[in-house]
Length: 55
Image 1 (cartoon, helix red, strand yellow):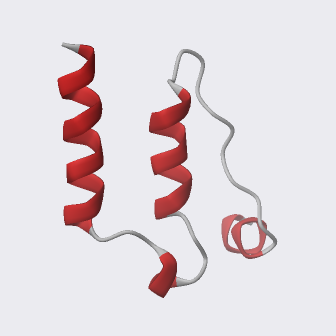
Image 2 (tube, rainbow, N blue to C red; image 1 turned 90 degrees about the vertical axis):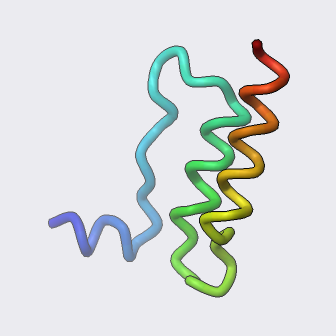
C-alpha cells in the first residue's frame, strides 16, 4: 500500500535521464515533515535558476 510505503521512507528513484539537481528538488518536496518542505515559491525559484543555466 502506498501510504505504508511512503511512511516507511520509500521514495521513487530518480527517473532515467533526470538531472541530479532536479531529483534533489523532487526529494525535498517529499519530506515527511511539512515544515521542512520548500514552499512553492522556493521551488519555482530553484527551477527557474536551473532553467536559466541550461538555456
